[in-house]
Length: 127
Image (cartoon, rainbow, N blue to C red):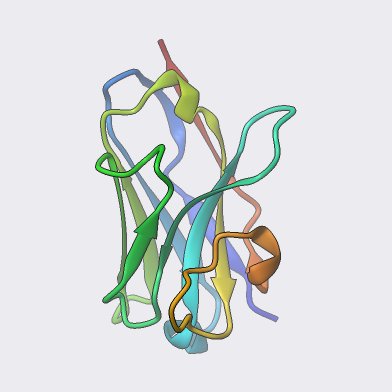
């Protein structure tokens, strides 16, 4: 069983930046595609960003394109989400997710396309 542990959330003002981290419990996660999702109160979990196993391909939701950057450090076996120019509407519980297989053409954007999930880290952006 793969465990994912997120960190880095917090309370910030609009316009600020935060960097989230996700540490998988096993080294084999280096070969997994990974992603970030978020869920605001009374809303469905939504896709934020995905990154291929090698880190060479990244895909973003339109709402975060140009503000967020997903990356991974394979040596440290850690996934990151750099969030800049944060908006109040970015407030949510952010989840790290891992998928045992990479994607060929279409990046995985649906929650059920991922095999493992973290517990989430809260991001609150005050307006």
